[in-house]
Each structure stands twice: as structure tokens, then as C-alpha cells.
Length: 209
Image 1 (cartoon, rainbow, N blue to C red):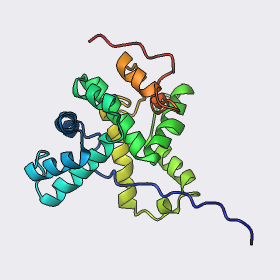
Image 2: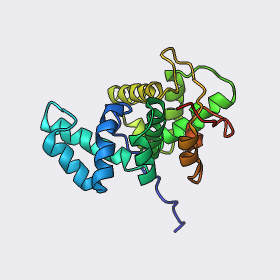
Image 3: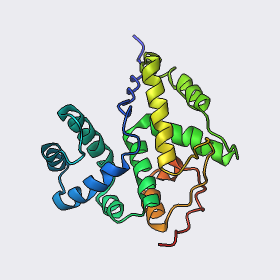
């Protein structure tokens, strides 16, 4: 019997709401710096309804989502997030989403950054749909998605890009200049997480603070 290749890991696709979760991060990051325990943080969020969800089910869902995303950041990055400017916060949260969701990370690297480096100024829904069609050859779970789910995923990714300052309201890619602190944190990873951004590796001068 011939050997079979290992099955491809299914994409996590639970990013259908909430976009970048910037408001939630402002609440949750300081709580983690105090507790240093994500399980405790999640329990406190749900107990005290810190995210002001309308229902207990929504509270659990958003608590789980923000904890999973921020859990992708190092303790040093969380501390940076607590004191970050709005721009830095957007960049860190985009990196967290790319780490949490392989599909988003691959779209950021293979489409967003690649189009930027090729001097293509616009990013469209068709770019995302074409990307998904290519990935569905290896990930049948994508081909099984309902159109409504696909539309929510696509819309939320573009909202994240917009909220992170990487895409204009009109769909234009915005060249990113990372602050020195954020650039250093992202480039310390291997491979560098600068690959998730429309920027050159050497275009990371600091912002005025």
C-alpha cells in the first residue's frame, strides 16, 4: 500500500463577526497584564460582562474570541498593546488575527503584501474570492461554505484591514509605516510577521509619539 500524505489541517473560520476587536482589546489587555492567566481573564470577562454583550451567549463568544486572539501575542506585545497609540494597536491586532487564523495570515502574505510589492494599489473582493478558490483545492471546507458565510468572512477580513489602517474605504492599499517598537516585536519572530503588512522590510521607521 502506498503511503498517503498527511491530511491538510482545516482552517479555523470563526472570524465571522467583531472585526479587529479594538475596543475589546483596550479592556482585556490590561486585565491580562494584571492576572497573567488567560483562563482567569476569560472568566472575569464573562462574570462581569466587561464587553457589554447583550446575551450570555454573546458574552461567551466575544470573550473566547478576544482571548484567543490576544493569546497569540507575547507578554511583551501585550504590554506594548496596553500603552500603544491607536495606530500601533491596529497593527498589533492585525498581526494577532493573522497568527490566530491561518487563512487570514496567508491572505495577508500572499495577496495583500504581494499586491503592494507589485505596486498594485487596489484590493477587491474578487482578489479574496480568487484566493479562496485556489485554497479550496487543498481545503475542501472552503468549498463547503454557504454563500452567506463566505460573504461574512470576506466582509470581516476587509473590515479588519480597514480598521488596522491597511486599506482605505475605497479599497486602496495603504502603505504602512510601523513604529519602531511594533516593527521590532514583529520582526523578532521567525519568519518575520512583517510579511502580513503592505510594507517593505526596511520601511519601519518610528512614528513621532
